[in-house]
Length: 138
Image (cartoon, rainbow, N blue to C red; front, side, top):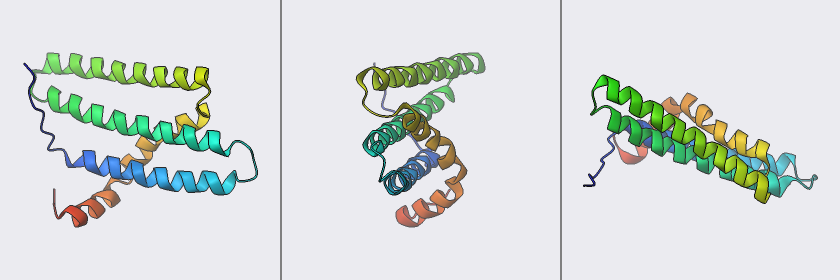
């Protein structure tokens, strides 16, 4: 039986907004810096794919944490480890697909995935932004 998952985590929206902010800034920087080099499309596509994977990881983490808080300690720890391994395997599969199909630059994909870390650092700023837009507080 499927249960409907309701996420009440305000950090999810903050992290997604942070990822989108860094996506826009990163693409602008890539186009400005690499205008005269032929790699700019490969870098832009790779960075876009990396940020998309980062957003997918944020959503997957939110669901796995939401599930684990309803479990006992031992089961929750196993669940968190399992979902972490799933995210790592998914990232490796994305790297392999990008590498074999030559869809973009692998370094740009890695940089796009690291945007998750950067967006976590600016969550106080993005929270102020999202709380003003959606009129919600923590």
